[in-house]
Length: 296
Image 1 (cartoon, rainbow, N blue to C red):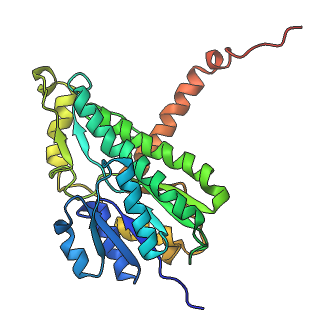
Image 2: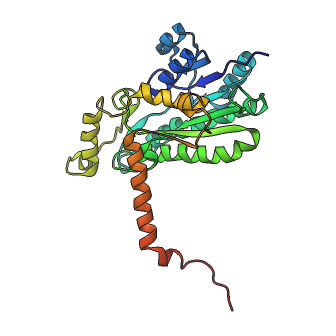
Image 3: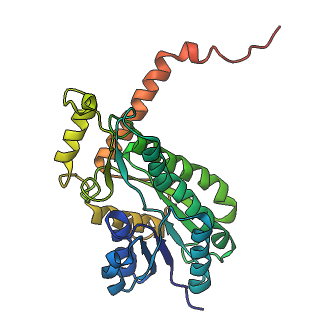
């Protein structure tokens, strides 16, 4: 009996992590359904053997469900559902408009949830795959999942949602032998801070553009960081594929609920634990004073 070829469905395959994960999966002989809002932007993946199609996570749920049904009908299964779509909104909280806030969450949160919901019925009903699970659902968080900051509040909120979503899915989907995990990269040298994925508020205020404010300082810093990020996306995506497929250095290990990438993200998370524990220690007496007491 031949082992079925793993099937990947990857959103936002035109650049960054989505594109590189698709390329590596193809290199390993897997079936890849690479998607983009404009499929012409992923012609290079088609030339490598990917099946390409138009897909937008902000489409109506019924249209997303139709795509999912077509994929299962044509390919039989989806082993790895990679939700790589997303963008960063540069906006102080006071600057962001209701429309910008909705657009941010529609792509970064609502669209991801709708995509996962549409693909789960088929994943739950498919046989166990080559890696010993029925399927794997991947969301993308960020260093920003752990640390909020000036100018990227909306992005941090959205990415924290993706991390929380993966934690919840991991519990909900365990009975069906489906794995859920969130990829949390630090700063990687992609075009994320310089291309279409970087959106600036249309309602910028002079008070926040002032470089003496934290918001102004972050905006200046991001321009300098662009194309100088410490992370290597090829190395990062190789690690992602190894972990998801339990191959190479990940052989014999279970997929963690978090795939943390980059020394900067590692340091940020450790710092978050340290600062949070300091708060708990300082305020322990009041924190523990709020429970009901047993009346004698």
